[in-house]
Image (cartoon, rainbow, N blue to C red; front, top):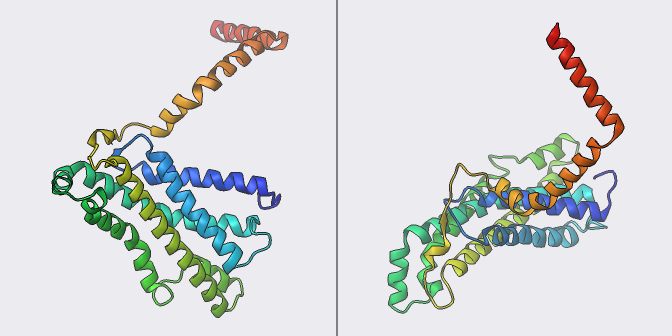
Length: 260
């Protein structure tokens, strides 16, 4: 990918990175709902892509902005940190909506809107989601020297220049994490609490930790289209003369070994 440096290949790999990060961000929540993967993908990949575009075109000013040398490493750092924030924020939001339903319904019954009723819930979820990156920012450079800055210094770059790059990256990471976490939590609340200010708890489904949701997704959307093609290819191969001779040869060899 780095050698080819083709914009189409780079973009396809970036989409793949965002999809894998999305799956990891939402799979550990205690509860799920129908459009959770799509909402998480929008919040995670969308926020990281938006911040990445600003960082590469305005802050770093790379030409072209899609160059694999810059896009893939920076996008990976943004996705990795944003995944942590969104994962914590999602888990907190869905758990509070499922297990604290009575308190929210009481506020709604007293005339509060869905956003007013879920204000404390959202504040808690976003705070927990942003805590890791805020802790990292408070000690970076004085206690902790991140890997990017360390690598640049070991590679011969001046510490001052390495620190400038690291400051830019950590601010981009914080912006992506904040934007993604807030977006993901708002999408959850807008789904579970509808526009008529009703808590639709039936939309939340407790997850079975023993299930492989990636396999379920494959079985539901990919396998029905791929399996008939595999069977057709298998039947075609079995009709080939060389294949039939090879099978007969292995059967005779197996019989001879069994006789011995």
